[in-house]
Figure 1: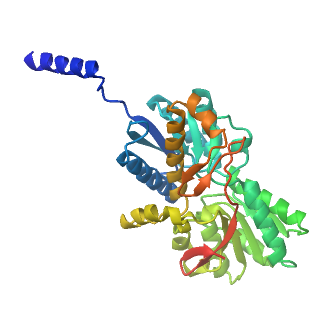
Figure 2: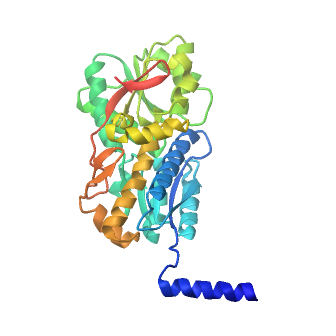
Figure 3: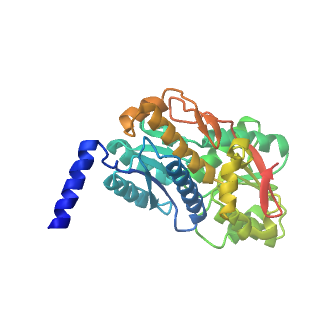
Length: 366
């Protein structure tokens, strides 16, 4: 009894002196932590964990510590909705996710209904912000922007060559292939083939044989690194020198793990590499000191946490009702990606897409 009464008195004293500890602010990231695209989930988790640790070390947000929750949607739309509902139960204020557009779009409906801020580091399908609520933002570019760059590049650099377009039927893959094809045609190009393939398979030899028979010089793949890697490997096995061109889902070292030397010369579009941003140098070093290469979407997820901190402190609150006007105001945020703001749709104002090439197991500017 004595211990209990002492505790009550101590608590009362804290209340009287205004020193009651503030509750943590729960933030989250969600993506494919398991499954064939888990390397991207690992990128997002690493970025979120480092950002939360750095923000907490600097005093947190509004004097409160951030607490990170990690959700695994395996890039499955139904699982993404289940993850979103679980985040609601946890009282999450920010979702730095999801990764696959096919997961982000249905999950965004839950976040909109429940008043949770969503900033995706990686989902590029235009529908996310075109149809999403006022709570939905992204720090990456869009497939129509990416496709415009890729289509014009194909038309200019491979004029007179036989170009085929394939996609994996996902919101991301099909969307990207369609936007690239649209831009290619607008520049005067004419595709020799447009096909869909099924993600998750191990044998694409039937598709590859069809490409070989058509004498395809360049193959544009709207899809993820796992399937693109197998397709390029199987093209080489069939003696094809066809150039493989794709998008931002190839920004993982795992691509080369799948292809080996067969991946040499693969081209892809991605935003300017944030690792080369001088302002990001100390954070890039912190990752590398821990044995983590901040490739792909690591720094994009880190930036989402930075934006949340700056917006909450400008608003004087972590509540979405106070934060949204700040995000919608055109305010510039200081991030590892550079200074950025959002337009009225929730899309980011950052430089667009550039081309990269895979050489000797690494990707760099073309």
